Image 1 (spheres, rainbow, N blue to C red):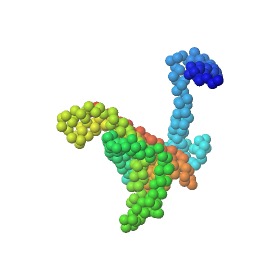
Image 2 (image 1 turned 90 degrees about the vertical axis):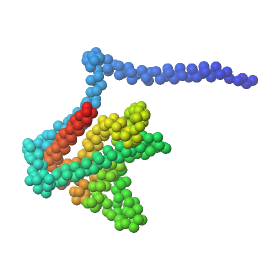
Image 3 (image 1 turned 45 degrees about the horizontal axis):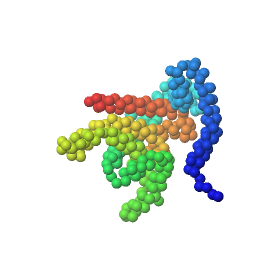
Image 4 (image 1 turned 180 degrees about the vertical axis):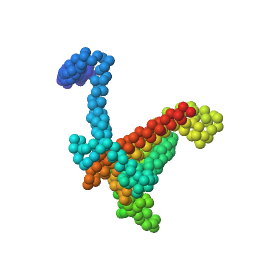
Length: 346
């Protein structure tokens, strides 16, 4: 005779099963805890509870020292040595000769008068690239953030779309655009449809710099848009309600409410984009390789080419150029932060 199972029976069976699993899993959980406790307890007794934080930070400090601090000190040493040997003990000490070589110019505004003319062409190209790229990133990121902050249809979708290029590898981004811009690429196909003449966009000195700026802005603006969007959402909506009561229009809201409160975030975007622009290498290296000629060769590519890519590898000269770049970045960053603090106090 069949009997319908009592629901309480199922509850008891489930409780019993959970108890069995708990008994089986408890040793597996307690074993690592006991091992960690056996290691940390003597250390805690020796250094004290107050200093245990240093113990937990130590692995990160070791990684920073090995992969950041030590290479920086080694780079400083290489900048003071000469020759083409790789190992430090084989390199003769030359003092500031590498820096003297870099700054040996009759006219700093004319790279042809410099001993290291490629270094100064890289600086000239970098300044031009930074001005247009940072301006483009700040402008288009601000416009995009303002649009995405409004109540539009599929707002979440469009936010994802604008951020998606940031998730791609810079090499992948550059290869995609290189296929688009090549002579038989998509852009020339569109141009020919309208009856215009196709161009070798990346080999034309008049267009190469424009396209490397365009591709870098397209690839990176999503990150800065996200930062500005966070800044916009931190502005209290009550301020806009108060301005509307006073009869302010949209332009006045933007000028007197949005921009003043968004300026600290704008300075963050400006500093981050400036540092990234000066260090730009990957997009341009894949797109143009610094060409045509030296039209798009920036200072970072000069450092790479001088130290690793030329037939004669001048590690000391490359290290000296990287130190000049690092000091310039430090000065620019401190200057921008100072200006930002002054504007916020005003």
